[in-house]
Length: 142
Image 1 (spheres, rainbow, N blue to C red):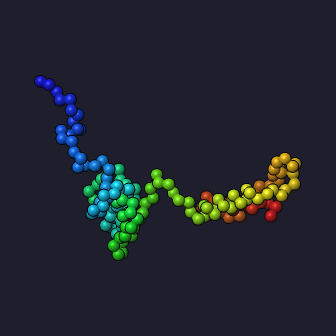
Image 2 (cartoon, rainbow, N blue to C red):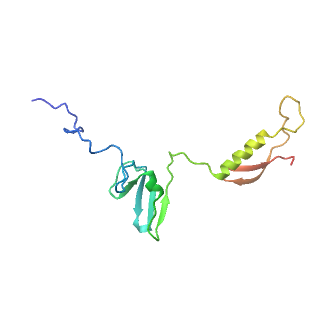
Image 3 (cartoon, rainbow, N blue to C red):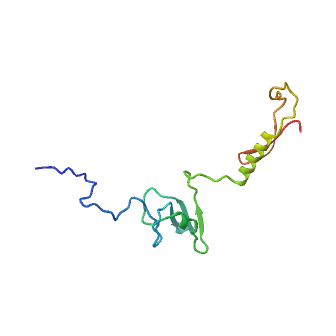
């Protein structure tokens, strides 16, 4: 008796009907899915998060456009979970802090010194305020 060389996972008939890419669940939308929508009926909440690792029967895969335009029924809350692998956009505070740091670095040094480099530090700067991971520092001379 001769054994089959065909792998048990391969089909005897090749199929082009099933795509390895998951598509948007919305009718007539063929774009690839990037997010998964789940309804939590007990909390009246619609949760839109990163694309689930596998398709579940009670979840809906959505493309980027349909995910952005998602609205929930009246009285429901939409929770949008950030995708940790997606690049995050800097906030206005981050950009302002960066601009201030560049201005400070570009400001000419007015301290007297040895002429060739920076003047020796006399004291540490004083923390004036804090917002998240950013700190506002004031030099001890001012």
